[in-house]
Image (cartoon, rainbow, N blue to C red):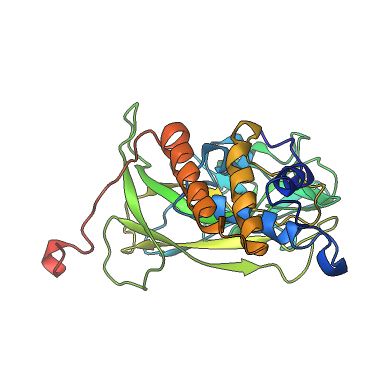
Length: 343
């Protein structure tokens, strides 16, 4: 569960450990350096390679950070936004954000846009997931039953759009965007069209960047290439939505792969000492206290700062190894096919 402990309470505790030297409102600067120290500690605890169960993204309650999508023959880059449309035994694709009019309802007809070519035809059954709107800065998936669910495709105006009948309230809907990626933890490919009870799956390597390729074969690498941010805001939205573009390598061929991606969320930035410690659990707050203590000692130029920071790092490792990473899973793949010089 998220923390119920405030930044202020940790700073008050640390004050008793730095011989009473003030770390708040120093030189009349409100909350500083206490607020910056807290942000620094929190951000450090959530960075790679520290992997925490409580910091995993879980889009639409699926257990995945990025909602499941499928590869398309000869398409290397996939713009993901965390609202999807799927047709059985065909592609599962993401749709644009609300600001980019991912789904528009007018006169009883819903028009859906997709982020890449979908290959659907009229008469097929399409299932939509996590399509909704923003309200007061919060994205909420529509629950009317006329937006999310399974519907019959009426027409296909373009390769990246289709329509279906809907009695939902007229308006603009869409995807929330992927706004909280800290770093990609793992990726798995699934043999999408395999009919076995348990479909074949395997991990692929996550890299920082991948070049454009001309070799066509089953991909074995993926990267979070870049992000595209909305230029306008949807109604009720406080910050622009982000489209996360992922690249598969090499280029997928005709075989369809389901892509499953987990990521660790990026840390929030605290704006006041009355904030709570985000996703960090209360039962592990001793690690946070140690980190704030070490940085506070460094601020007041106390010689204990170095050893206290080392103790902070030790506690982070202990918590990670004991609670959240009982046994790491590692998989190795060749960089390139043997015929092309891989090893």
